[in-house]
Length: 85
Image 1 (cartoon, rainbow, N blue to C red):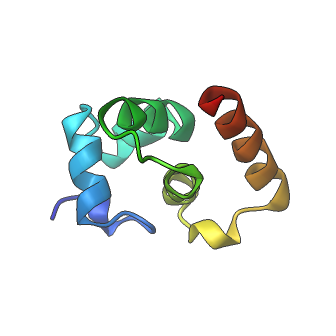
Image 2 (image 1 turned 90 degrees about the horizontal axis):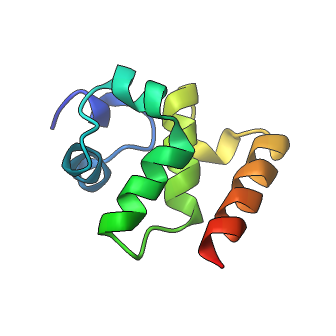
């Protein structure tokens, strides 16, 4: 396991997916942002769900995704619903 799996919410599978889409460092993940990183992952894994999107945002913020603010969760859900239609 590499650098990304040291972040909250990032296990071996999600790290492998991030690597596959070209995101190999914490800095790259932060620069890409959770939404765009999730879209890249969705392109290679159609099962990518809202929880994975939240996990990415939590990783960027350095917290477990369950602890994201209600506003952030709402924003991510709106984004997810928009791109999943």
